[in-house]
Length: 120
Image (cartoon, rainbow, N blue to C red):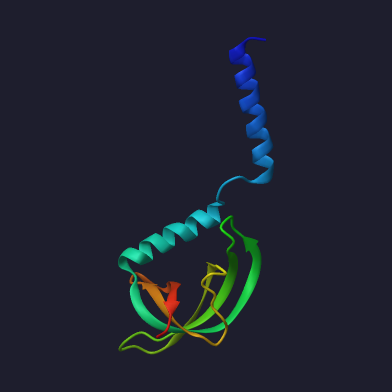
């Protein structure tokens, strides 16, 4: 077996091994990242309130835990409404049920939102 054959064999072995343990972000995590990026650019800052939070059991490499979060969003000049989002929450910036928060809302779909900070 020549050097190139050994390199190819090693690469195939590594690919087979890592495909079993899920190296890298999942499609869902990539969708959340893309949503966050969009909301950072065009999201409307809106007050919100965390009605409830429940962990999905999913975690990511930086140490976040994914939650389903029921929110009441109170847009300026509009009626408050409820929606449920999912988002990773990190120990260095925790959120809790009953907390008033800053939310960014998608101007194209008011049910698409993310927590972007604690209320002042």
